[in-house]
Image (cartoon, rainbow, N blue to C red):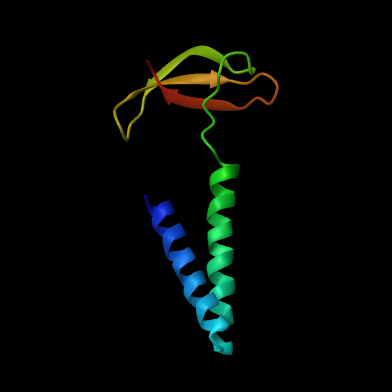
Length: 93
């Protein structure tokens, strides 16, 4: 929700800055640049840190570890990647 709002605001600021720059206002250039940079950062962040839930056969192993998340009170399942040593926590089925 917040990411989407930030993207909309950044695109709006970039569009206003670009429109003002094309209308002849030289001082609007930073608006166009910052709006474009923030929009690009939001899009790259969304791509880079996409949902990491995995499908069968990609190396993640389900462990016997389960715990109750103190914030949500939901049961969590632990997954382990033996190649990287990374651990991942997902809601238990």
